[in-house]
Image (cartoon, rainbow, N blue to C red; front, side, top):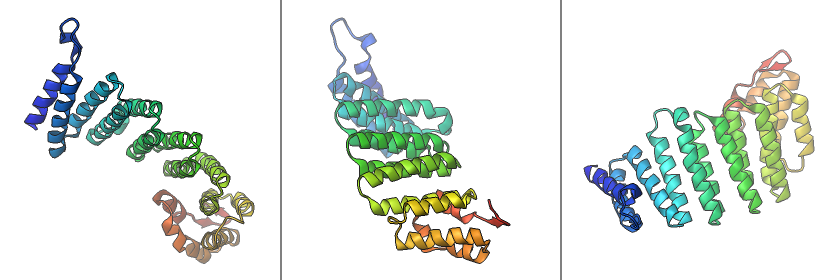
Length: 280
């Protein structure tokens, strides 16, 4: 750790233009070598706060040299370590997000659209527990990058994750909108099996809100894409609610295909209850 601190301080001196003589430029090469040394020591000590600072200096140095890909990667690493070191992600959200935004801009300008989308998805995963709405927005932004680049299949997967984050945050109306957007993307690239999976998720959400009619509309509109397993589940779930059949509802909730869904959706399905003609 002490060696890392010394290397970081030495690197800062090499980059501190205020202390440079006239006409003398920052020693980026020497600074990067020292920062890599500091990185090694801080990694060994799992010193995430110091790593965040180290990667931030690396990013700025690479950016000054117009090395956009390396700068973008370093901003992403800095953001990640800042998130790992944070005791309050909500309070540190802006600082983390600013570094991710820098990474995305640099990576996209360098043509690394995959890297930019990946940085956003990482940010989403860091923030999901405390700010699922923010995580969903980041995932949708990643999807938009992929769709612009004609990488619609990957964009569809990112949209699915965005919808899951919205379910996690109990933003079911927004989750429904995102799922419809996701279905549109998968339909455009002829991903029939993914359309069926998204339809199943939509049915579950509508049923959790007590809207069986809308759930049945989803089934009707996407019947050709819904597979046998998904079909068995949605049929049992909607019929159980219509018939107020608790046993059938439990069978639906215990269906094997439910276990393959993301945890927020599983939790949503498990708490569906019949009360008279209502589901809460």
